[in-house]
Amino acid sequence: MNQVNESIPQEFILLGFSNRPWLEFPLFVVVFISYFTTIFGNLTVILVSRLDSKLHTPMYFFLTNLSLLDLCYTTSTVPQMLVNLYSTRKVISYGGCVAQLFMFLALGTTECVLLAVMSFDRFVAICQPLHYSVIIHQRLCLQLAAASWITGFGNSVCLSTLTLQLPLCGPYVVDHFLCEVPALLKLSCVDTTANEAELFFGSVLFHLIPLILILISYAFIVQAVLRIQSAEGRQKAFGTCGSHLIVVSLFYGTAISMYLQPPSSASKDRGKMVSLFYGIIAPMLNPLIYTLRNKEVKEAFKRVVVRVFLVKK
Image (cartoon, rainbow, N blue to C red; front, side, top):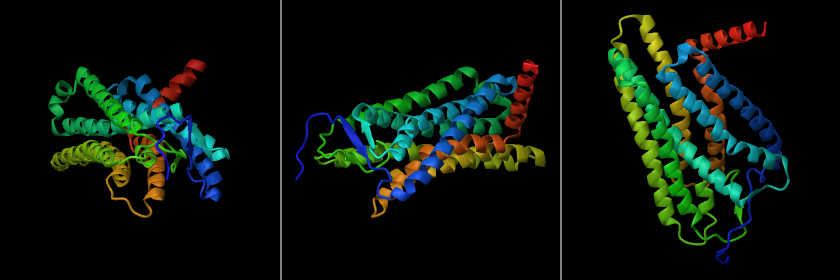
């Protein structure tokens, strides 16, 4: 029986997908391409939103925050994952594991809150269009964005501290490709029921409640859109809201299936694949969803490109 080790481990072994070695190279290629696409797509959204004055609106301010969030989110895990997929020695230092745990929690929670804030912005824009500029002013935008980031990092401080205080016993093998709370709890030599309850409570607080608020907002939005007389107006309203709804479905669907479903015999592999999706694939898809479905962003991108080429000439 393993003995409780009160000392701090120097490193952890991240098993990742080492039980399926044939999967590692194709996964390395997919993750590398996805990461490059995520960097390029989100940087493009940030630059276009900042360089084009027509996009200096609350909607694109929040979209810029989401793109910055996704950049940080993937960078907190993907480089280490690529190293481990390529290497035979799949380790992460204790400090790296702590940083990864803290950032993954913080940025994931921030995105939960920010997506709810974005739905509130769309609710006011469509249901209260005449009062939109009065209600969603610059100061409120900054306050809502700051509240999202502060809430995310505050939740991470609490959950990370509670997790890292648990005594661990060797071998320090994490059956995951990143340092995530559920995987680290399995290394503890003491009862983790209280920690699991706190994790479940946090998941309800930051997954279910924001999702319910988003769904309520969209119930009012659909009613308002159906009252719009012109087909063009309805199409534009559904276009901007549709992009946000797709992003919400991708993020909340995978996160809830990860943290709020009871464990099963396939939960380990399911957890890895779900984490892979909402930690890597979803941040890659977000800028594509917003740009491909949004005429304003595409036109702003063309204007920025033309301006850049004119300056060069």
